Image (cartoon, rainbow, N blue to C red; front, side, top):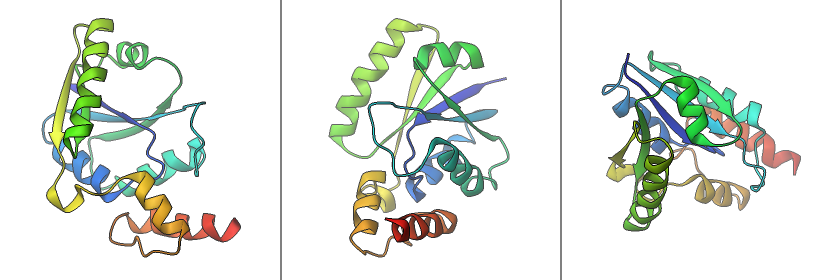
Length: 160
């Protein structure tokens, strides 16, 4: 089975992430969305909330599983017996960062390839950070995130 891992913080998951999942799910037998627990980042949504939001947003994609992990991605990839890492590219800046990360991962686990998928032009400007900032400032982000995420953002912001 060809299993790929799509790692990220997904705080929150966006329509760009879901589009990438829909397209990459056609290339592999199974995609595992691996939500990273990053102790150095301050997240708006908890790890459990992010996992739930991705599961709800991607439930129409039958070969997608959502999981979370702590620690080194290379260790997680070995545990899952993955053959590839999926990464989305929006800009040249993304490419430079992802190329370095891909090279580091290749050094740590040579049998795994990093597959870069270009963002759909509809989502090239969409990032989780931009969505959070716009939502916190009262902007309408309903076209940028799945409905369940919009509801969760509204509820979270109301608590602040």
